[in-house]
Length: 141
Image (tube, rainbow, N blue to C red):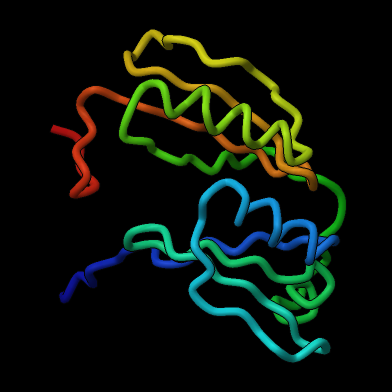
């Protein structure tokens, strides 16, 4: 039996305030890769290494997926790995300046590294993390 080579290539966040959220992620340093010019079907995609972070209006994501998407879901944490330990604090400060709620200031967890958490303006949970054993090929050494 053939086992497929599976990779996460997109992370889509359903948002209610589309323009605000596009501006928020652009302010954090994500580069816009593609953006819709159709007001009836807006989306914004940011390149982030081998993964695309996509923003899509929550009501359109619900329609497309065929399920109800409501409320705030923080059972999922998205993580942004950074190159330098000091970058963790920089991203937390930038996120806060653009409307994020810092849920935990930067700290050294039991597993090593350095990280902090915030909720973006629509309450999506993010971890900003630096780890001494993470190399930029996307693997732990």
